[in-house]
Amino acid sequence: MNNHRRTVLASALAASIAIATPLTAFAQKKIVVGFSQIGAESEWRTANTNSMKSAAAAAGIELKFSDAQQKQENQIKALRSFIAQKVDVIALTPVVESGWDTVLKEIKDAKIPLILMDRSVDSKDTSLYATHIGFDFVKQGEMAGQWLVERAKTMKGDINVVELQGTVGSAPAIDRKKGFEDAIKGNANIKIIRSQTGDFTRAKGKEVMEAFLKAEGKKINVLYAHNDDMAIGAIQAIEEAGLKPAKDILVISVDGVKGAFEAMIAGKLNVSVECSPLLGPLVMATAKDIVAGKTVARRIIGKDGVYPMETAAKEFPSRQY
Ligand code: AHR
Image (cartoon, rainbow, N blue to C red; front, side):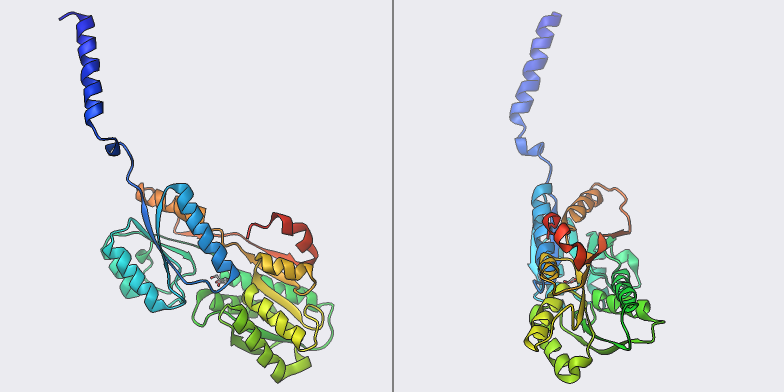
């Protein structure tokens, strides 16, 4: 056989193999991520869910989404269903810190890598998860407290603070409380006179603030809310009580959502500590790296910062959530 004939035959053979091989064999298998979300308690949470969904779509990842409606038992059920479905990666935002060891062990035994997103667990065995992409909630509480300590330099007498805590037993409620208390320690005139959960919601924030106002009235100088939604609810209660939020009662909160920026521009909220919910792209990139067998960082910390009302109007046009 001459060289020309050999080349023609080889090309024909290659072409026939290409035709016979189904196209799907060349397509990469789609990564499947099971995501157990807490619920939709706040503007922050909605932005976080949207970030996860849009980032998954952009990354070509199939996202199996489960809304736990604030219940740990629903999250545990969802996690077991992800194990049964043999997803490639599980992402979990734990509503509370405790009580995860058994189900996390089941995930590990099923050899499914776990990404903790936003909130953390208090499990001693850190090998139960591949990484925690979240925040330093203690630092956020400290930043809120430091803002007050600075502001207090211009105030006279006792400064009575009421605190609206997040969901009982959740990492941000525990840590933001601690951080704030650490920051005001050493300032004997700043006192937390009431502290109660508002469950991170506007409705509960308003209800609890009404009770604080009823009990303490004009004694209250400052409201520290663990998130913007509770602060926005409380602002309504303050106004309905005939007082001026951000003037008669200073209002400090955490998250930096659009609603908080609007309240700051309206002169009703003094400061919001940022906690960016836009973790989706980072979670999806990490899921891809894990599936590809790459080593990922054990702890990745999201964006934070402090936005006082004076900067709100300038910052507002560039806010993404
Ligand atoms: O875990 C993050 C917190 O949960 C946000 O501050 C709050 O708004 C949300 O509900």
